[in-house]
Image 1 (cartoon, rainbow, N blue to C red):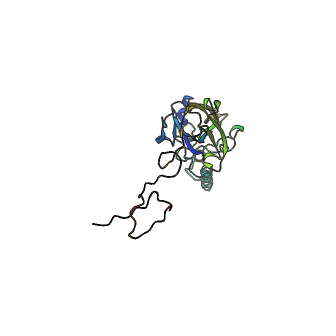
Image 2 (image 1 turned 90 degrees about the vertical axis):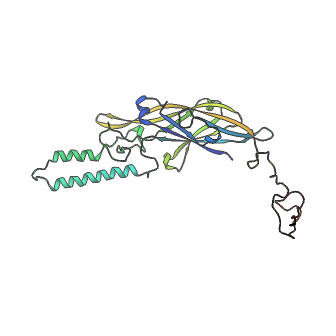
Image 3 (image 1 turned 135 degrees about the horizontal axis):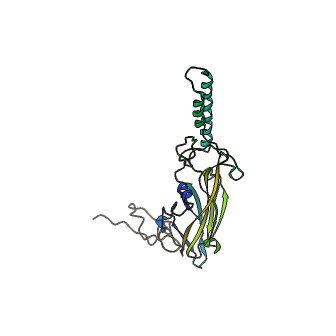
Amino acid sequence: MAQQLAIIVLVDIGNALETNNLEGNTYLFDNMKLHGSEGQGTDELVTAIHGAYWRDGSQATEQVLNWLPYSLGSIPPTVPRSYQSDRARQSDEQALASLDAITAKAGAVGSDPAAELNQIRKATGTRVKTTRRTRGRLSGQKVLDVTGQVITDTSAAYSYPGPVITDIYGEAVDEKIMYPAEYGSPDLVTDGWYWSATVDTSRPGTYAYTMRMQLHKLVQESGEALWEPVNLTCRSKLVITSEPKRNGFTGAGLGWLPIAPGSAGPQQQGATQQEGTSGYAGSQQQPTPNV
């Protein structure tokens, strides 16, 4: 059965958009650190992939890679899926309540409806316009900061949408070392999609590959806020090793588990043992009498 390996792609979206580069703004992790992976927590991760072959030289074990992209400095992806919609609805409800209050005291001495309406406008936040390229999870959402508060001033710090992997290519794919594809999933943290690849472990070596990432930058156009897609790339590597299939308990070759004679421990006085009973090997051993 193939082993599942995970690669976390953590992106500092704010700095990546400012420099228009993922180099130095991407942090890669996998779950093979104790098995030889190098560069954990940097953009120079080399993922160790252990393959195995049978006695006849044929491939014994494939490996499966899964890439999971996340954003650094954004609202965690583990919050409920309705979180942004709930926050937007709450800001609308607060604005309606404030409008009712203004209406109730209309004409009162000392009231300033213009200033109060301006405060309501700020409280309702900025809703991002839906475009053909930002349909789906980015459609019509209000802009939130990293604490989940609705904001109006888009020049302030705000929460970016998570990065999206749109393609995986390069040497490892061209050499048919791995076969990446995007798959559907019931896991809503990844919006129902994730990238995975089967790796051919019969050809040891080091192979590079490139991930194309899509980030989104908030821009103002004709007085409206829009999420503008920005496509950048980052590289990583696989190092594939291969060794004979062996017993996971003993480290030796495949076969029956070796059990030393008498390893089952002393038996009760007078107890008998049937020859060939499972769990024992060698001749029957008699207990040593006390002197």
